[in-house]
Image 1 (cartoon, rainbow, N blue to C red):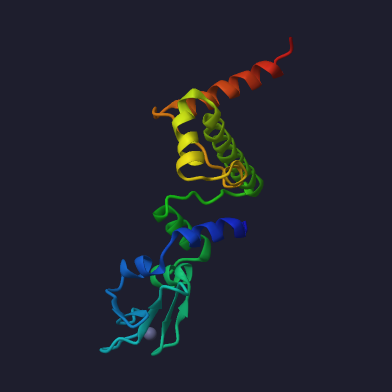
Image 2 (cartoon, rainbow, N blue to C red; image 1 turned 90 degrees about the vertical axis):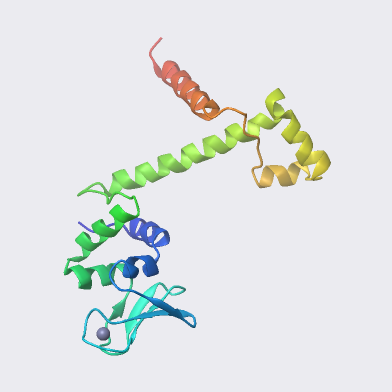
Length: 182
Ligand SMILES: [Zn+2]
C-alpha cells in the first residue's frame, strides 16, 4: 500500500536528518554543513556531507545522496516502507496500516477538530470569571483590540490541569445524549 504523502510530510517535519545520520556516522560541523566518513564507500578523509537546511545527505566520493528515508534504506538495506516505519517509530508516529488511508485522514481531521474545540474552550474562558484577569491583561495592559484578540485566538487557561478534559468530556456526553432516541 502506498504511504500517504501527508504522513510522509508530517514525518519529515518531525525528523532532523542530522540526528538520523548521527546515529550511524559521527559528524562534524564545518561551514553550513556536517561532514563525516562516508558509510557507503571506504575513505580516510570525509567527503560525506549532510545539509541540515536542505535535510539531505550527499557523498562527493561515491555520489550517494538523498533524504533521511533514503539514508536509512541504504544503511539498513531496507525497502522504502520499512525504512519509513523505522523512522516513524523514532519520531513517535504510527505508519497507517494497510487500507487505512481513509482512517488516517479521518483521524487527522478529528484531531484538527479537537484542536479547534480546545481553542474555543480557552477563548470562551475570557468571558468567564476565571478568565477575567487574563481578559483585562489583554485589553488594558497589552492594549490588544477584541478584533485582534479574536483573529489570533487568544484565550485564558484556567488554573487546573484537567479543565479542558472535563469540558470536552461534558460536551461529548451532551452530544451523545442528544443523539439518543427520546
Ligand atoms: Zn561515499
